[in-house]
Length: 166
Ligand SMILES: CCCCCCCCCCCC(=O)SCCNC(=O)CCNC(=O)[C@H](O)C(C)(C)COP(=O)(O)OP(=O)(O)OC[C@H]1O[C@@H](n2cnc3c(N)ncnc32)[C@H](O)[C@@H]1OP(=O)(O)O
Image: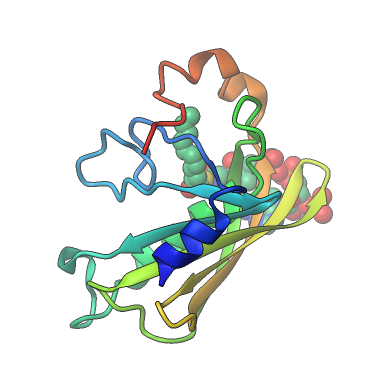
């Protein structure tokens, strides 16, 4: 089902950069999630993920901390925009609603959306869906621009920040 959706959206899909060591997007992080994240329209991104057994809390259920991690990064990345001039933001606040159990071992679709901008702050939203399109968990974030001197564009290549081919 996710594959069909992917094909339909291919024309608009733009892959976002990955980093080297980030827990969610680091391509060289051996214990990370190594997600591939795509912008499907301006301010809307998506990824898919199948959680392994070692991330379970209750039997068969993805641990809430990992759910929060997914919602955190995907909601913030919805604001990232043009990969050559990415908007990097710290999360100041994250509110999670755990609506239903998120299963391990089954494909999940995670969608992020840009909400309101307020100067150097912004709000983001992310939702985790099962294959049938049920919303299992959602999160809203309050995000703050990272001052450019803390993450200079010139350092990004060294951090492995680039679009990796699929
Ligand atoms: C290249 C590889 C990349 C690879 C990686 C790519 C993506 C990685 C995504 C990872 C996402 C994360 O985990 S980010 C990491 C986790 N987050 C952090 O470490 C951030 C730690 N916190 C901070 O640095 C700071 O608290 C900030 C920046 C969030 C805010 O500090 P500040 O900028 O000094 O803010 P300040 O002037 O005091 O306050 C401005 C206004 O915001 C309010 N405010 C301030 N903080 C908060 C807050 N946490 N929650 C609510 N409201 C807040 C204040 O009351 C004030 O309201 P008023 O008085 O104006 O009304």
